[in-house]
Image 1 (cartoon, rainbow, N blue to C red):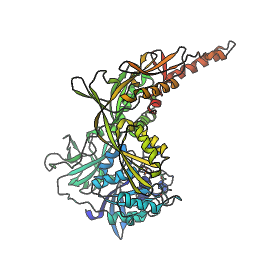
Image 2 (cartoon, protein in one colour):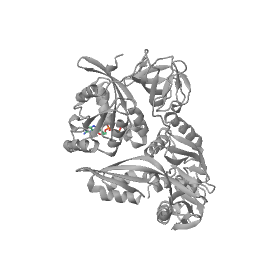
Image 3 (cartoon, rainbow, N blue to C red):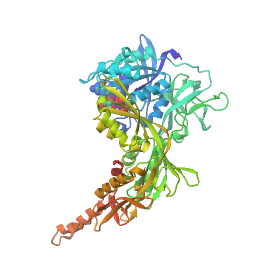
Image 4 (cartoon, rainbow, N blue to C red):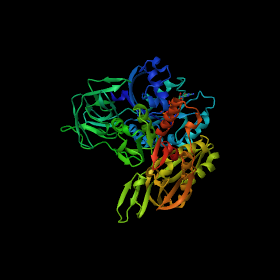
Length: 599
Ligand code: GTP
């Protein structure tokens, strides 16, 4: 196979700048898919329902296209990447599988935080980058301004940018020519020991685990005995092929430089982790894995409980099923006197959390109660030992110190919004590290702040204070000791464990007051007065109350209509199902989600 006729590339972009639309057009132009399949407006690479609805790419996919250029036949392998910060490890792995990247920028939006973050990842992976300015059909496209930003903010030559409209199919031929002319072909030899980089995988109910690989050396065929280098687990290859975009078996296998899929009877995707290297087991195996593999660690945690306690088993099988396809989902059984049996789950970020919860509710038909998201705290005990706890209710009363995870955040914004954005971040315990004016309409701020402040709705607040003219990206930095205290909440003298949080000591009163106020609003009146208190170390720091109210639903029906009376009482009972009992008090299930929104 002639390596000079192969191009492996990815498309990188900020969310919604048009990556999937461009990918569809490339497939249409190369006749990889029938144009008619695209006409209903649905994107082909995003095949999960939820992806379609949310319009985001959750798992990347790869596709092989045949492209004729100047009478030469080229094999183009496109690897789609997720655009969101929660999945940046996956972006990084897919970029390690290619030689070049198309950088898609929306001509009406310009350079955004994840444009910059993705370019950084591409540079780290030594990729050839060329820019595609998309959506030039939009009346408010500002092509010249964005080209200027490209030069000033990212340092790429605007003369090399290709102007297109992915939606209208304009400029697609130029993009394909650019791929052939500008992206280097792969190197390496099929005579070397097998080194296959795992850049994605998914679980198929009928076929089992399907692993996406990029060969950096050697060849891979049906019947080969292979080994996963990190875990040393061994498998026999059952099938090798590529996506065109449907699965297509390749009897001759794939060799160095190519991209494809492998099936080998693995039981769950965690058995062959993304970023790992596959080689031949025994004779002919590689000595060293490819660089860069790391285990991903969840950053955001919450408790997930079935609203109907009888659904625990169903929740368990559903979480297990999801895990087959999502190696980054972490879970363990959790139980709480108030919420019953459930799971404590760990996620890569908030978006990942929302997606998992939504899939559980929708695909597995469950009604769930989710506790306020938390991070992992490092608790230094009195004897000096350190414990990592991701559930605030488990933090002991007596301790020496609490350390919390910090992140570095970059914000791209229009300079006119600078004041409002800095105020917002300061109110979230952020320290401003750097301000730079990049070009007339673009500035960049960098901050350092606790991760927990980022996961409590910062993204939405940023959108609203900047009216959409700001975007952000963050990376983990380190753990720092902070003056933090655990705050417990009691409702009618009963402690509600799942509402415990960790707050800065200096801010405990304000946050406690806000929390109690919100609870007093959300909890319905009962027949007795209910007090809501926030306590730190057993001392009340804030309180509120709910006045009694006698709601006699049947008082409306005078006369003796028994069936009508019964109906009303049934209705009230149903309403109660949406409640959870804490001591003598019924608390609506969505309280936890509502609380997560306040700050
Ligand atoms: P993620 O997968 O979430 O990262 O998004 P994406 O970058 O793949 O964006 P997608 O292709 O889903 O496009 C986002 C929106 O922009 C869709 O509503 C598209 O129809 C629209 N869009 C894409 N390209 C163009 C274009 O050239 N012109 C116009 N007017 N709209 C476009």
